[in-house]
Image (cartoon, rainbow, N blue to C red; front, side, top):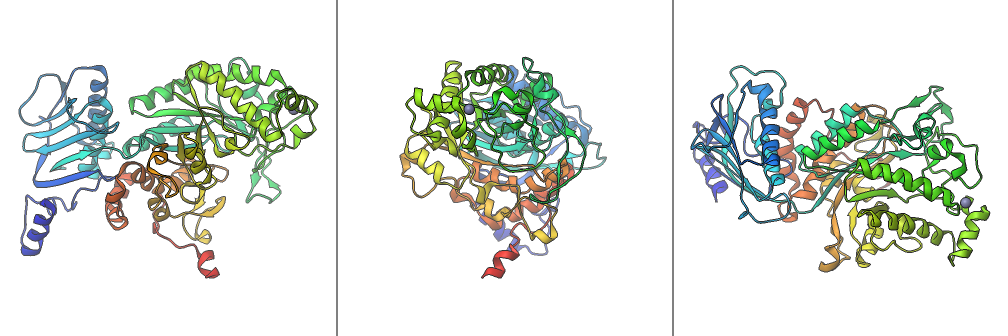
Length: 554
Ligand SMILES: [Zn+2]
């Protein structure tokens, strides 16, 4: 109703100035929050933040932490040292309030801006945190600057926002195996997830091309496994190499620091330790873990490699359990990702130990041997109160009893798993692989191939029509994947991830019936300015660019 009222005002009053209207005050137009909140009412007027504004927070460590996080965001550009107080103030305050009467999904919050200031209410601190992200996006984009903006008016439109996420798993992935990115960039990546109310960072830490996490019991994993002697130049199959050693890894202290940093932003870090495939860097470090005994080399090119962990050798399971014990110690997440994808069976077919395992365990074939491998690891995790996530190949040969499936080869694996009453995270390549081109490849830096523009991401619905209501309940949410074979720098990662990750955030957060492409495009005009202030190297071309190859075919 309010919206309609303003439209009428604009129509009636064209040429007249409405100083109190959010359409005219600072030329910012209406509310441009990404992801779009479930329900927004815009009222007449603005609250102006000034140096006298107080932050009033309920006592409690987590609430305090949210209040301090907010003060840290507001301080550099405003120059205001906003005190966090525990006694109430009637006006000129931003209030963070735990209110158990606010009901909804994890992360639910209400945000009211009126003449007295801002009130964010939520039953849990996480809701307050999301309310702060919305408040931040109600402020002019210059709020993100790191230097004091003298004379800038910090106006916040009067609004009532009632908001909650649609899905409880809202993830973005990053492959640090193919290319390594420093901890400072990982933190920036996490900050951007927080801005978009995402709650999972899936950290792909081990690959054929590099082992990136310190394991104290097996130092060679990083001494040997984190370095490849050179890297492929150009596209897969070019057969040209740069001749330069490439490496990098995270120490356990760095990992713990990043996990804590994410936790302050209500983001769970889910580590991925790949098995039984994509393990060449580990085999190069400890050749006795492979079927042939090696020697092996850390991979210098992309793709899938025949050498994988030997499934018939108990030493492999001892090794993995030792590694995973250290991993669990660093990552408190309920879920640990164990990979499980793209595991060729050629070595297992020829390995006496693997064949003996098949015989002794009464397995039908190598697919069931893979299933045995995953089940055995799952049992280990379950005994420690953890759950596994695996790529959809873990369906082959039978799903481990409690495993969550990440559906990447389209939606088929996810649909099959949900029908078997297993939890599912949707990451189908056609919509959520951010290593694909997002515009005419002739105009873009080198990428792996494929074509997925932001509009395709935006229009993706994580709930497949093939599922009934009960089965759809097993879909936890959607995740975007950022594989980095061709992304050598943080800048390029940002270029590929944004603005597609903004669209992803909206499919995970915003109710399906509130999604609207044209409205998203309009909000993104402002949101991109915010990303620019945050020094994000996003792709600035059309978000609905056409694939020229596809057009030619037609
Ligand atoms: Zn073997």
